[in-house]
Length: 211
Ligand SMILES: C[S@@+](CC[C@H](N)C(=O)[O-])C[C@H]1O[C@@H](n2cnc3c(N)ncnc32)[C@H](O)[C@@H]1O
Picture: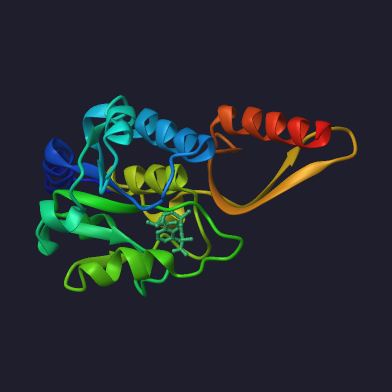
């Protein structure tokens, strides 16, 4: 954690107007994506969360329940110097000082791939090459996990102070579990993942088995 009055002022100034901006880049808002978006809204609060690049009016209506929803891309709303982009392929790890005088941090609204394919770089970072791009450490966090990490860094934590776990085995039955190959922050020793996602995986598996 950071200490001292100067640093407290910095934290306060970051927090007053700071936005967590999810650049929505998936074609459809399926259940899995919606669960991650809902969780992101719970983590930072509806008043701090902004969805950008939301093209379909029905999606704007849906996502307005979780935060501000804009059809414009983040590149049309912010100047490059006002934001930090979270990109797994960025060379430099995110530090609290990176957020000084910034208006927001941009997270890709992109579901995880088995291994990161560089979609954030291709679809987000290269659109704003002058903006500061930062990583959260090795591996691919989920959207809500990345939002959680960003919030903690914004509050003054260093990345190396936040415990994380690579991969998550979700037990489906006595003999079967599903492996999620992402990196999860740990909160009180437990992975930051919404319980609705675990329920969703159970429902999906049961309906697959019935087919
Ligand atoms: C599930 S990840 C999608 C990553 C995507 N498959 C790719 O290849 O870039 C969703 C978002 O979380 C953020 N993110 C996830 N892991 C990250 C990391 N290690 N460093 C920085 N940002 C990360 C990025 O903003 C990313 O767009």
